Length: 199
Image (tube, rainbow, N blue to C red; front, side, top):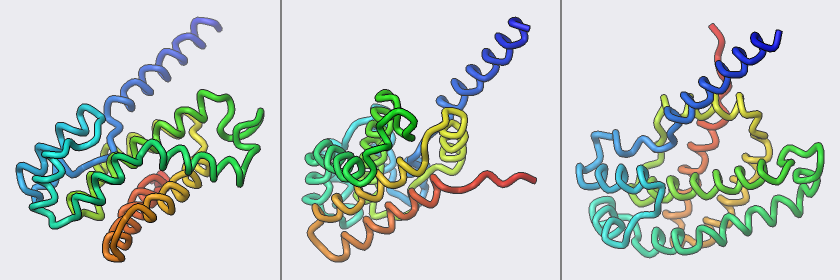
């Protein structure tokens, strides 16, 4: 019995590790309608899971026509934006981080805040590129499956992202920019919440 259980757990662990390798949010670096320089800059930044450099922002925004001010400001304020969205979420739903809550124990909550930061990083790439649809279909399917296997509380994550959207929109200077960013957040939320269709 123990051997069967171990085999089952090993298979599950291997499946999770495989999903971690495939899971990917951004698809901009594979979008052939984008300029090669833009794709390369996004690919390098995403591979290193970092913000864009000022030089990368300048190059991308020159091609896309997006405001360098907005992109730089969102990056500079990203930690504060995630912290503020966390505060808003926990004021509204304090039970989320208490025993029995969707974001309990603390490691689960920390993973949620970390994911929010990573999502904002990639959302800002999309905003810089002036692209609403920016996700990688195969990578997002793997991420959804990974979240399912790990028991990630999608309601808590979705609410945190909604607050993050509201707070990030306050940073953006123009109505056009706000509309574009709203569409980018909406695209991510739709992709995260696609239900697996069984055939």
